[in-house]
Length: 234
Image 1: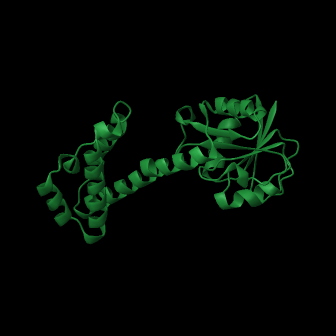
Image 2: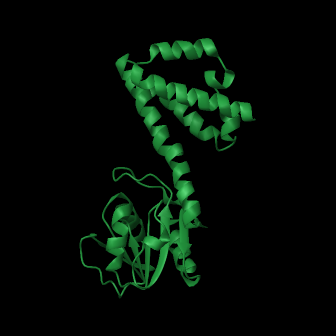
C-alpha cells in the first residue's frame, strides 16, 4: 500500500484528500501546513500550500519524495533533502464545488525517472490523465490558464454588473457563455471568434463605448484592439 501525506488544508488539499482517501490502494492522511513534518514513513508528501510557503514547509519534510501542486513554482523551490517533483492539477478549485477529476489534467515533473510511475499512478487514482510538463512549460501554461479562466471570469463579473445596473437577469447570458465554452472544443479560438471587433463594426463599437461607464471603457478598447490586430495577422 502506498502512503500519501497531503500537507495543507486549502482548496487543492481538501479536494485531493477527499478523492484519494477513497482508494483502497492508498493510505492517505492530511496535515496542516503548520504541523511538524517528519513524515519519513510516507512514500510521498503532496504540498498543497501557498507558493511562497513551499520552500519553508518542504525544508522540514524528510519524506522520500516531496511534490508541490503549484502552477508557477519551479521544482527547484522544493528544499527537502531527498527526491523532488511536481503534481499540478490544472483546474480552478473552490471548496463549495465538487471537482470532476477525470476531466482535470495533472502536470507532473520529476527529477528522478523512477518517481514518474508513482505520480502517474496517483493521477490514475484520481481518474485523471498525467502529462509530463517541465517547470518552464508549466509557467507558461499557468499564464495561458489565467487568460482562459481568471480573466474570462472577470469578464463575466463585468457583464453581471452591467446587467444588474439595468435590471437585466444575468441568467440570460448563461446559454451564450455555455455555447462559447463548448464551441472551442470543436473550433480553434480564432475560428470561433465573432462580434463587432471581429467584423470591424465601428458604429457598434462606438455605441458600446458610449454606453459604458468610464472604468470599463479602457478594458473594452484594449480587448477590441487585440481582436482587431489578431485578425490582421491571419
